[in-house]
Image (cartoon, protein in one colour):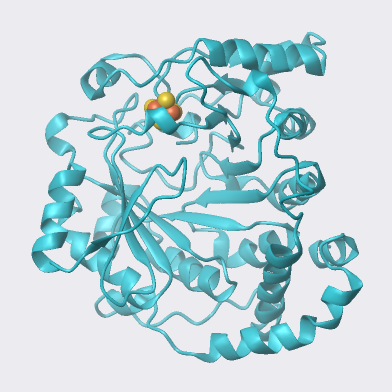
Length: 414
Ligand code: SF4
């Protein structure tokens, strides 16, 4: 279904199609260049067999070629909307062009930093946003100037209709959407990823906090490391690069793996992103359990004095560094010790339809209720604009955040 949709779209023009096979051949030959897999960094782990997906390896090359074509023949910058509705600007002239949509509160894992031990009270289905309501908000915000949408959760792949959602978002490209991204724990990706890429997915962040199986079980309260590593291999094979690997660093739990994770960025185009542990409801955050950017960088530099700093794209939350001759990079997301609020361009839509203009702000606006009470698009946009006018310049600091009521991370979407 996805392939048919893509082929019939404007992204595959006749001239583009004519060069498809040549480009696919080139991509296939690149694929043939062997590079170590993340599996190679896990002692004693066999290299995974590339997932079958009943499509086979050659079809992976086709998926990759399709994604490459979309990148090259997507909406040209001049054609895409570059104007941003004043409603998306706040009092500090930050323009909010990045929407993160949480598709579900459910997750296939139970990571200690994300989900309270006893789980969370799930919102009844009737109070969750229906797909058409979510798409209405996405369309409205793309028309207003949002150009990047990231799908999060919970775990977004637990939604059976995820491929259709990606397809529907893909239809928004002519209206200005330039990037469709996904953050996933990777567990279901060996099965779903080719379809998602065919349907329009451009970017992927995979969460992975350890390269040790027993420790994975301890952190995620479930088994699954082999599947995640398989997903990483597949994502690289499909050309989802740079692939971002999100690692929440927790003192005494996984901070001894910094160097092993950094090694992943050497041979493959992986951006390993070390994230400072953040306080959310129910995750038992303590200052002592957080490893600061400064400390992580110190440890990496001790082992790799030649680590070099990379320029950061605008609005990027990460500070990036590179090991010499590495294909990827090592980045730090230091929300706690070096907040990046001055460049914040993020809006969050929770699975129950609330708009959060700040990850750590407890104030929310229910767009679901407004829609169900009959709000027009103009009224919805007014609500978004009003919430943004109340957005603070920066978060209140880690200790204040820890003492403030917010949602558990799994119901915000990170
Ligand atoms: S803490 Fe809030 S304002 Fe700061 S970067 Fe995160 S979402 Fe934006």
